[in-house]
Image (cartoon, rainbow, N blue to C red):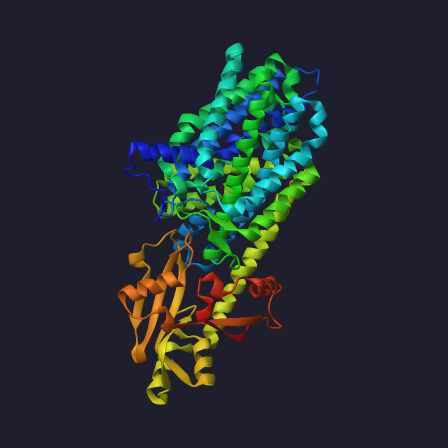
Length: 628
């Protein structure tokens, strides 16, 4: 059951959930003030001697209304209502839409591709966010002393290495300090902004949306570059939706509206007020907000905030990978649950190594947050556009929201997404190729796996003997029965597993009790234990057992066996033998090239024995060949 439900929560519990959400959900968007305004103003092509005021007013207006439309209206007020039993994120949406799309092959594949692409773009974002966040924080050392500039990349790499090294320990313990740290961070953002705004209150003119529109119309030559940089202020907005299952809708809404959004605006306007008075502060307007005595504490706080933001997006990548495994989008991976209290706290070593190498490469190649900003944005805006499409389809055509009202609303939101995506695509050769390359590789892997897995299941079905036919044969063959219970892991409980046929053919025996266990992942994040196991009792003491798991859960055979012992059978672990098929998949000569990655991944993936948590000393693996 999701931990995200906040209904009926006591004030104390609600406060705790709000503090937890503050530490996990808002780290990415909360560190955007470190670089977003600076990069956006520089994108306008302001020369050192030019009047910076029009750019400051115009870009502040664009940032303000981007936060209002993209984050507040789109995610916080609308899309977060499209939850899958409390869970959010692109895979939760994909699972919801797939329920209706399952009747149409074309619609189903379109939904699968959209979900896979959204997840692929998220992996690209998971590399760029730690790189740009840590670099932007460490660059504050230049304000402290220009002599430290040569060491910025080395310090950033050391911080990143430490960050990824501690991932395997999980965030259950250190997560308790994330909320208070981020509370101090956002409070500092607000206070620093207010001090500057009070000195230049005219900056509040930028709240007018027409200020931003007029600025764009007056700077059509660089409008694309400006919008491509303004989007940096809303990166992390999708995390509000993706992390909804951990904290619930209301805590996230309240924290955003009551603290995060106001403090972000205050800080951006404070930076703008400073730049109006002192244009030379454009070298680093965020750190220039701080008085000299507060610079070192602010640097330390920024280090902490960026580490938290990076850790949150890395944990999100682990969660997305876990969901992808459960939904059958990628091969089985070794997944370690790092907390017995927090649902969804997982660690995936292969993903951790993949992300670490990617982040190190980004920092080494781009060497500054300003350069890295060119690579940022494409993955985020692409994922946001997919969220809008899937959520719009679900809300309007599945939940029955009023088409006359919400088709134009989702159309407008999608138009904003495509504008932001389009402006970022123009940065392709400046670094934007990187997230596209990561997303392309990830998408090919997912589509290859999904297609190959379906072909493999069909081949198994075509070669298999129907269970009813096998039972009919037993009526006349009367094989020798031996004591104990044999549990066969099967892809479907209506077919006879090849491992059973091979065991009967070569060993000439059949166990006294035979259980055909099918572990299925359903389009729900969690399944309660009273709905987990269903059993059909057949002739000859054969039993077909169907076990359901949600896509946020970890399949565990022994947990299912415990439920069977409590409800159906009386046996001990010593009586049980698990039979697992271990097939070698080979391609037919006519097979498409897309199957080659699938076959390679199938041979390298984690075995079923380990994945399903089957005790090794009770597992018997029986091999075979299968052509697809």
